[in-house]
Amino acid sequence: MQKLTTFALIVVCLCSAYSVDAQCYLDRHNTSQESHWSSCSPSPNPNPANNNGHWILYEFDQDYPLYQLHYWNYNHPSDLDMGIQSVQIEVSEDGLSWLDMGTHTFDQADGSGFYEGADGPNLGGIQARYLLLTALSNYGDNQCYGLGELRIDVEGVQAPQLLVDIKVKLSGTYNPTTGLMQDQLRVKGLIPLQEPYASKASFIHTESGGGEQVSSTTVFDNDLDEDDIVDWVFVELRNSDDPNIIVQSKSALLQRDGDIVDLDGQSVLSMQAEANEYFISVRHRNHLGIMTAQEYSILLNEVISVDLTDNPSNVFGNQLFEFSDGSFGMYGANVNGENASIAANKHVRMTGPASINDFAALLLALDGDEISFVQDIYNDADINMDGNIRMTGPASINDFARMLLILGGDEIALLSQNY
Ligand SMILES: [Ca+2]
Ligand SMILES: [Ca+2]
Ligand SMILES: [Ca+2]
Ligand SMILES: [Ca+2]
Image (cartoon, rainbow, N blue to C red):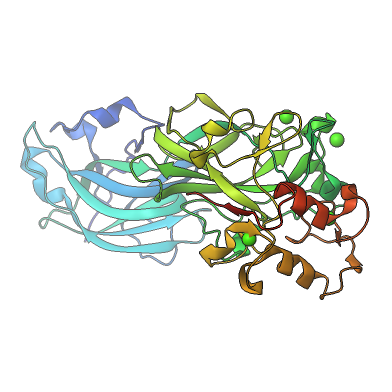
């Protein structure tokens, strides 16, 4: 059986686009014994479930998602049979509880100065702070086990983020006199902590989008009134060649002055995506969605500003409502709208069968009783987003009046989502 000689740790090399050790760029491993790890004696394995043996434990400074392994086996020309052949790979977050990533075979090194190693298994992004290699066999009768080097691709601690500073207005709740959207949903504590879109049929999150949430309603309340939060919106980055392809989505927060911000209620919105050209779309649960007329070239660490409130030609199909102050906003009153899977509801209209008629949907929310009202509710039938549903009273509190306003006073008008 094996007898004790040496045990030495080799330096693990964590490679990624974001954290690169210079050693990672050298794809060759030399043949010197000193630059290899070797063990000629079994010792107690860090995982007590394993027998005494030959093992290497890597401890990182924190958890990393571990992906592709690349190894250089023992490359001293006269001791190539020390190279590890069969190896058990285990990972752990705490060094106590171990997850078995299987038994793998490492190829023997070639003993040359040009040896470039070989790819080992891909661990698929498993989160771990500890990586344990336990050698089960080597390439001969050699009592010693050896390895040259191990490289581990890790996902960046932070995936690439694009910063998009988008401005929109919602016609349901914009007040041209103040130049701000109303925030009664916030004042009444009705804005949900968790984004509302994941549960809606026509909002399909893409990639890392979905499930966004804030820890407390205090996030909705900023120092400046104009920065207080109106509601959740749904933002998409779309492929510049085919805008039907959604590359990334994210639920974000809308301030009263139109700024779409990140989940702290203040910061520029970050979208997890690679630098590229994108169309940007903004959608809201009871407004017609809009998309930029042009694609934007978005670079990493560079804020791109997209103001969709001052010129309708910035929006695909010129699809914006003009306010009395000359600014522009997304068409509201889509009561049955984005919260539905049928495309016919992506209009705002007071005509047609009940299934596609937003007026009918408003009436339904009041159980068909035009003079009743519902208070303190977060609901798509609340067209002016004041937390109540009602079809009576002065225009400032009357959802029907707001619907008629958005339709330009024309009951048979038909507004369409154009993309
Ligand atoms: Ca405030
Ligand atoms: Ca603001
Ligand atoms: Ca509709
Ligand atoms: Ca209302």
